[in-house]
Image (cartoon, rainbow, N blue to C red; front, side, top):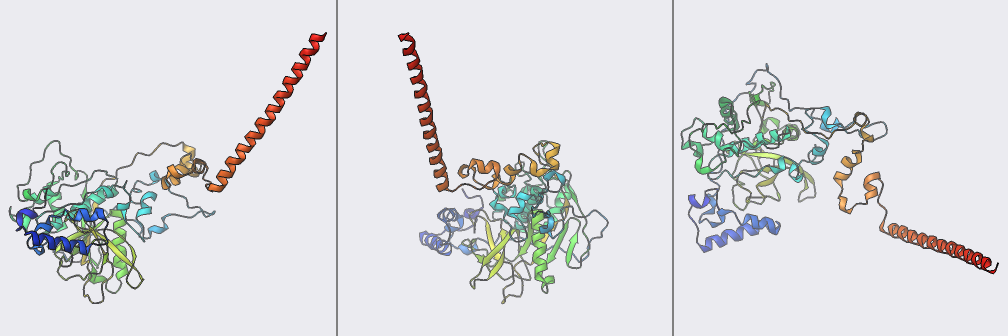
Amino acid sequence: SDVSGTLEEYALGAAEDVYTNLTKLITNNMEDSIAKLKSKLMNPAICLKDVNKWGEKKTGLVLPELSSNNSDNTNEKDDTKTDIKSDEKLEEGFDGVIDLPLLHENELAGYTTIEDYQYCNNEYCDRLKDKTSCISKINVEDQGNCATSWLFASKLHLDTIGCMKGHDNFSASALYVANCSKKDSKDKCLTGSNPLEFLNIIDENKFLPTTSNLPYSYKKVGNECPQTMENWTNLWKDVKLLKSENNDKSLNTNGYISYQSKHFKDNFNEYANLIKHEIQNKGSVIAYVNSKDINSYDFNGNKVHKLCGSATPDMAVNIIGYGKYLNENNEVKSFWLVRNSWGKHWADEGNFKVDIETPENCEHNFIHTFATFNIYVPFVKKNIQSESEINLYYSKNSPDFFNNLYLKNLDADNTNKDSLIQGQDEPSSDSTVEVKEQSAGDGTKQSSEEGEQKSSKEGEAKEKSESEKEK
């Protein structure tokens, strides 16, 4: 069923219109797998008469009015920030072996555990590949036919911060924030806003229920701010807005920091590194972009796009990762992995890739601004398997050392058991057969010798018995 409101809001097309829409979608996504194509064919936009109208209302961003150095620096700093040189966290010992820090040595280790570092580091970040991670379990949202991209980009950013703090189920209710706005009822769906208002609404109410407490439906956007129920969870219970350090390149206020790309034209790597650093520590950033080049129903999310930006962004999305690719000239370039809130049947299951650099023919970078929440969220300590004190001190002597370091990274069903226990190389198939044959040969020889000894003893006993009878 269509939960986006597409089939209710727009005129349906004739058979010829649907055929044209289908053909265009398949043609523009020929490189997709059959499974992904089947998913895209479930996009209700295919059924529209004028499919170009599909993305018109799915924007909804009004830039917050802030000036540089907007906040003083009298409160606590952002507790999610760490040294930007994260690659230097792992120190190499005298023997060339990297000593892995124990998870429980630092209560903030949930941001960058060794396991997480495999999926997100300075060169590459895609936590969606780690199917056991909290972030990979966050659903792709569908804002429906409302101008609420600001709402869902803010929600996802808050949810990923919760994940990075160890919360397994930190899914904020978008409907609660939308309906607790002070806008007129009809404007709650039709008028855009920004992540700063998202924070202000929650902090003013001092309450934020979960999605399971109050699920989102675009049809319900415009209702009154709901009365909280006793059985609802308050995700905002111990959360605090923090004041930011003054920075002449940032626009900030309590709980909110943003950076515009135009201030980094002379050193764009600095801008990209700031984004990467925030993604490593907070799971995502909010990005303000212009939707004109991505608002088609048949947008290809697999290939890396080179897109121009605009001086007037109209939509909020999230950057959730980054990586490298070879362009048409076989040059190594970098891309952002971006998530939208137009449903899982759009682009690459709701995500798309865009080149980090500004194309030569463009005045503005696609990422006009990136923003993050500067908030305190309590850290949830994970349950850690108990170890003896001596194994905590000599971690490499722990019985679970090879299990944690080695077993988790190999397919145990296809790996030699001795190799798993002792950490040795697997024997080749030829040597395995040779060992088996040798063992079989030794067993035959041993059985033969035992048989000869047994026959000799039986003969001696028989001769002794006959000698006694003659006597």
